[in-house]
Image 1 (cartoon, rainbow, N blue to C red):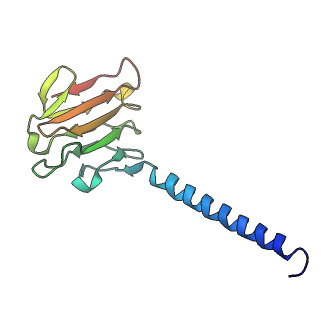
Image 2: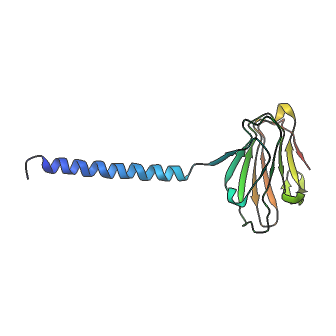
Image 3: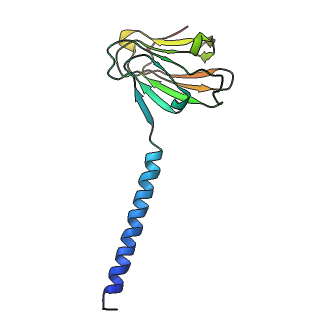
Length: 149
């Protein structure tokens, strides 16, 4: 073997291993990114939307998100909502089933963000616990006023 050949072979092998590690790390990182979905019109959330963060960014009118039917929904199914446009924003139970548990209401059927100066920045995480929806509301400021109905 000519002088220096072994060193070049080791360097190539090392670069190849580094490239593979970088590609593996990127794939792992990519798998941990949030699923985002922007809706500018009303939307029926599907069971396939598990783990999705929904926004209304770019909406020019009210947007209503209807939660999925729960008959075949697994316990622990979840999604999130975030208001990113100054438009009325509604999260409603499928069929108005009075099965949302949220601030001061065990049997709500919707949460509405409708006060113009208090919309942007509101968020809510919904988790199906097998009996009802647990709604964890994240206020953008202490003065935001969600309407629980």
